[in-house]
Image (cartoon, rainbow over all chains, first blue to last red; front, top):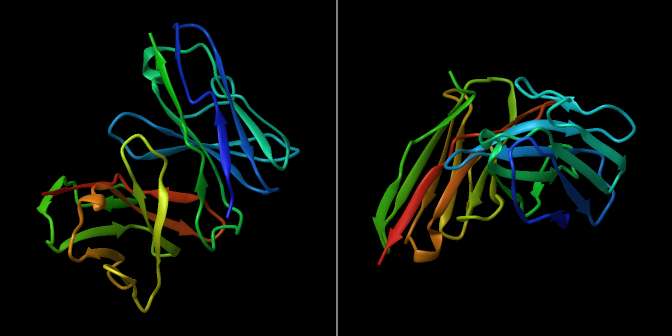
Length: 115
Length: 109
């Protein structure tokens, strides 16, 4: 299993500003993921955070808008840049310790509201 | 067509009822299948993995039909605490987890 913490748990931000979300895991993991969950919707994968290389972004998400860092095997950050109200969402960090054979573990999420 | 589709819901059932959720997936190469549960304002958590032979965990039974690309979750003797959104999740080898849109269940007293 894995225990994941995220900071901040929630924030209210002004449009045009940026917010960096931190994700800390209690063990070393190869694969870390960032998801977005908009109100009433399911999870959408933003990107896979790779240690030592650039993140891999899914269709519809770009590095300029969602820069990601992965400095080591237990930590990652996601920045939501130049925010607009459409970015209001829950952002979830997750890890896949067994490479997809078993479950993914999720952090508690960061609830972002952009005014 | 979405890669993973689920019953739209919501399902409102009385306590003690049996309820079944359906899920279909489009990628025939999918290899791993899961049901996750997400409580309101919480992160998703694994409810159970789904095996080819079907599997049961207490009141919960999961079935997989690879030929039809169909997954089901049966909940017997529903409890108030079963109220949540149930997410069907599929993974293909070497690829990422794909989450279905979820089916919301409300168990009523």
